Image (cartoon, rainbow, N blue to C red; front, side):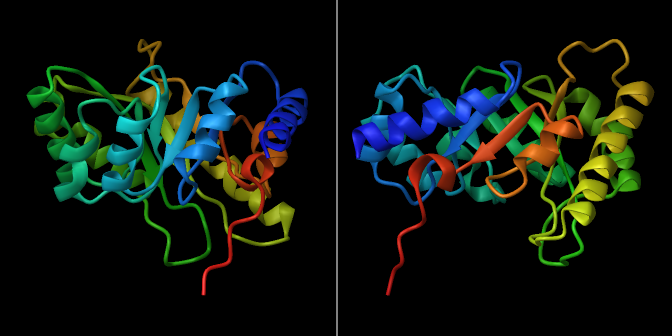
Length: 226
């Protein structure tokens, strides 16, 4: 298994440009498998449950960059605020306010991405461009000193239709460009576009992704639970 994860990582990294951040999606994976990927040299991991992430953090080396990639409930922010590297899915001013509050309690600044709804599925979370603009223009946002918006994130429709996926990624890149021009023109830290997973990362990279979230291609297929 150690060699398998190591080989998968090595083979996958050969296909990915060096300037792309690869987040190994370790949600549902045991600490032992994450440690194997760590021992193979990987440092960025993604989780989607705050309490599970906090428990894994205690059992693994301190130099891991933990990315929170799921929908984050406000009452769970406190569990990850002391250490999280990047929150990928900020979809409301209320959530941003809570992240700022908990970051202040931990005496740190937390990097965040604004999540946009780009998929055809209604079940996915995210802002539209108008909602994002209202958030950024809000007086409260400008008072938040313990958060930093570093870019955008979006999840494409789960489909085999790669042209649909491409159009959705292109839409997200367009949102990023418009935000950059309008609000973040002089902010060198506003540079991240988190899009692309195991089934569509190649298209995401072609369309401008800077962060890809990869699970099965590193850890193998999800375990079937009964």
